[in-house]
Length: 458
Image (cartoon, rainbow, N blue to C red; front, side, top):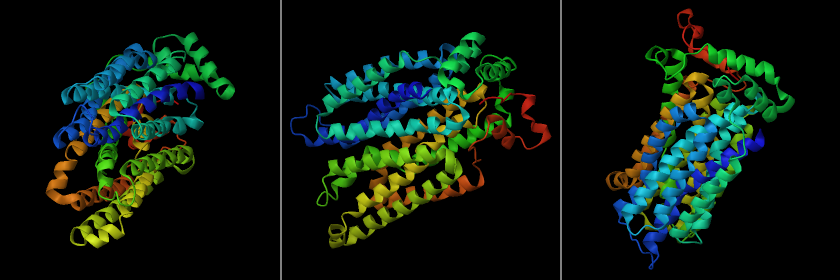
């Protein structure tokens, strides 16, 4: 089970390299004298943000495709847009080819962000569902760290080749792994489901009993796409709304803007530390904090970690915006305290990685009935991509209008509002079966979950 999850999560590493590519690549394009391509400021924002547009498309396509041909086959075929996008970037002769490559790679990232967490949750035992489900973000930030580290030593062309190589490595490792037992059972193959369940989980569960329960659940559900009646059921629309709003707060905390433009942000404090080294430090901090979150998420709980995450992001962004505000009128202050941007963003990424980095993805799968899982996972990915595009594309424009300090104050305010949303709305799912989670959304007899959609699933 762990090896199968690890093999799938290698594709999250490939996605992380794509997400982290923008910062070192655009820095190299704009500062290296011999770079064959010199993007303008507006083109840099497109290189950073267009990945999210592709992810929106890939996220919407991934759910139906994964239900039709399987989680494994979907991820294997996804190697085509992954490598195609990277080669378009590597051999680009103009900015348009780079943007096109980023768009295609973004489609592959959208598929990965839906299919990999779905696969990891469906092959896991209840005891480690949180660990494996949230590990997607942990492996993604490892890819981001690899991107900024390798990008500080090689040109943007060779960094694109590294991205293609990691994507191919993920395919090779995952090729021998089994399909999700839940998808196999959905194809009316009880014997195959039992065999795969036993191979994956050993003696931790009674494979025959577990598969019988899942199969009974599946046979009680209608086939095909969700109906409008099912979408109106609280076990579907309530977690869908919560998932989309969590994605909003995840992106409008400014997280992707920080990652995409980190080298440019640190350019202002280059007297304290080289911008490339600052970006590497941020990536390393994000990896450690995310892996720590993955380890404790099944012990501490999702809700507490989300609240702590929002609180730390609010604090760090407030400090950072105050630094930039004071520096406008006081050049000596800016020089004397040039370490504040790095310290603030380290605290920000610690907070982000602790909760908002991985838990929204976990909850988008964990709160949802099996039948609606791929649909809502795709919706959440589409919303995440849309919000990521808006926040990364408008970062420079927002700086021009509200200045750097105003931009980070806006992000801080939205992070603060997100804390109240977590306290008042988000349910705690730690250690609960999906049937228990569903009952949270159906508190009246009128909304009995058995009326329209079954939720028996581990």
